[in-house]
Every structure is written in structure tokens, then in C-alpha cells.
Image (cartoon, rainbow, N blue to C red; front, top):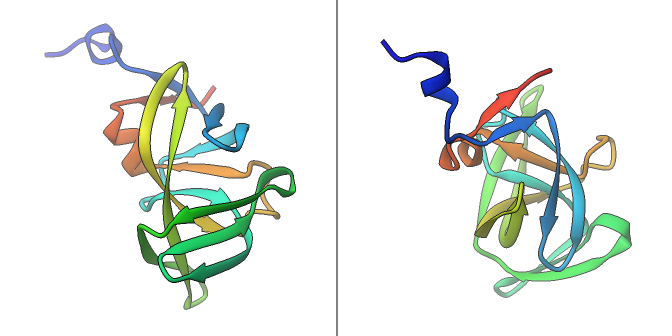
Length: 132
């Protein structure tokens, strides 16, 4: 039987709210959400896709243009669906670098944090969430 200490050692422990650094944007506050089973989400409005690029306005009114990696359809409740572009950013969390991390772009202006870190990324980095 594995002990709790063995289970947690050498694993990154995340809080529900974490500061992250996204290349080209800077430090932002991110909500860690194990219930989000899709890509990480970065706040973006005025989203425009042109050929294989996506341009959007994000944190602090910054305009960003990135290569379009993919799109995803998200079920946002009440039978509504939303198609979102996927772009990659290099990011760091707790001093660890994560290159080419995928983010879907969506309007998070109604949320307190401009970034949502989802379950696939949490699993990929083998992290645990401390809900305290």
C-alpha cells in the first residue's frame, strides 16, 4: 500500500488560484480547475481568424497574434456550443517551463481570473491540487 507521503513526494502541489507567466503576456492569475476536461483557457475578445493565424485582445488590452493550432467545440450549457480557436503559448508555473502549451481562447471577462488551467494539463504535469 502506498503512503500519502509517497503519493505526494516529487509532485507539484497547486493551489486553486496560481500565478503563471505566459510568454508575450506576462504574469497572470490562473484558476486551477480539475473539472475542466478540455484545454486551458485564456481570456480573449475580438477574436479574428485569418488564414492560419488568430488575433485577439487579451489581458490588459494587449493584442496578440498567434498561429492557429486547432479549434474545439465547447458545450457551455443549456444546449449551447461555442467554437474556440486553440493556440500555443510557452508558460511557466512554479518556476517550471512548459513550452507549446495549448490554450483555447474565450471571453473570460465575467470570471475573476483571466486563465483557466484544465485537468489535461494538471495530469500532464502530474500535479495535485490543494483546495485549502
